[in-house]
Image (tube, rainbow, N blue to C red; front, side, top):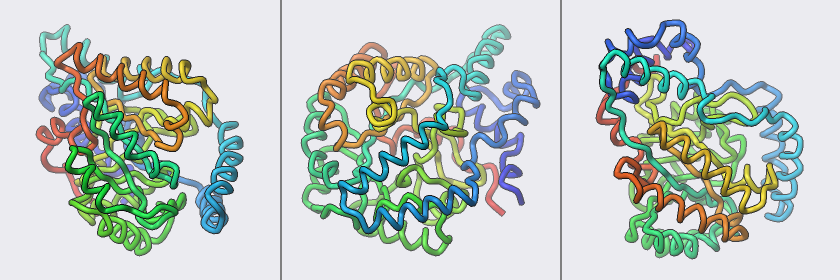
Length: 362
């Protein structure tokens, strides 16, 4: 079975029915089969070329034997080359599924069909990629608490910082979520053998306290095999796919969805601080203006805005992060229809509407 065979019309209709809060028959009448056919591959992990998979493995071998400073330098140089592939800027409204949802809402409104979409959601998450990130994590969470925000922190379990079980326990006690980012920061994890992926994921999960529900892959590497193993191990969600990918194909959607053929939920990523400050070299004010615009566009569509931060970066951008937290609070207080949630809860409303996958992987 080809991957795209998992994305049947039945599956897409059920996904859109859950997003829009209308019946499957209404979706069939309101959205053309041609639109559904064109949407088939967006919700799957993008195919990576043999060259890119091999390159990641080679670079990972170099990074694994380098100091933290050298790893960051090598990564920055590689990003300069990657940035040459960057596509032009796009607005959230241009994302394929966002256009379908917006148009469908207009069609249903004209026909007197009421949509029942869950409200907009703001999710803050942080990848603890290196020691500087870990060292600032406690101060960062204290700052978030002062704004009554609780985020999801994704940890590496066997990297260049030592996990303090007392600190992890305090995070849980204060209402934060702990997720898995891997054992080491293996940028080629998704391209390892199924056995190796399983070993690393199981080892990392077992080394963290409390049931671990979510995962984000190092350097956002993704593959069909990775998602199948996550599903087999009982992870509830992944957040390794771009919504709108500046370097390639994304999910073209800012709504959580059940990955085709699996129980696993995918929560597409909207913004990373590394894009803002390393890739685009924006000032703190410019970065905030960009994030504010994207966040407003997504919650206006009643989508899910997922921010991925790195405490080691945010430590040096205090004005940006405080302005961002203030704006999150302002939006949530201005409307009962907008909520700030941890990753583990941001797909709850959709899960209630779609309690079981349409089909399993063959």
